[in-house]
Image 1 (cartoon, one colour):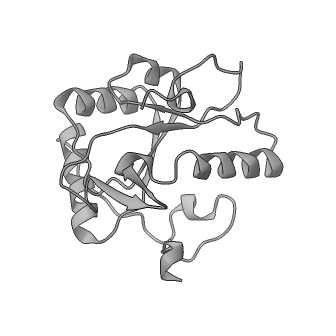
Image 2 (image 1 turned 60 degrees about the vertical axis):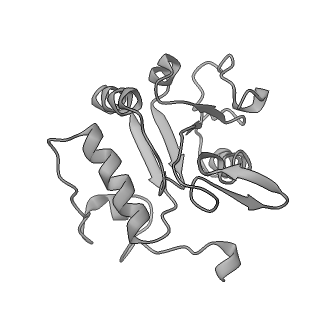
Length: 170
């Protein structure tokens, strides 16, 4: 994780910075980590940084948002994470949050930060994420978004949230 591409650096003033959350996972091969394209990947780094770089190219092409083209990765308990209004977690099905990380995520979200989490492979992985979020907000309940919720029609009208399979499955 000490690679320069994942370390915080001076931000471009006023630019959106994509922050990938670096987290620990439990389990062994195909749970905490997997082999793909000839190397070992920890779950937190699935498709990092290529997915972010592609997204940021499209964001700059299709919007007027000033976006830093260089994504970074931070741990939840790194105080620098509070400097970024948006964080992203991928492939969190076997995620293992420490008490400090759960507390830091709670503080981040209560301060107005936004979390995007995706890439669940089946119900057990979603349940593990729900378990972690219950540790973050023990007083809250998981609530599905109804099909008529305004968030599903902000840019394009969506009749439902589509499932997008990994490229090896289509």
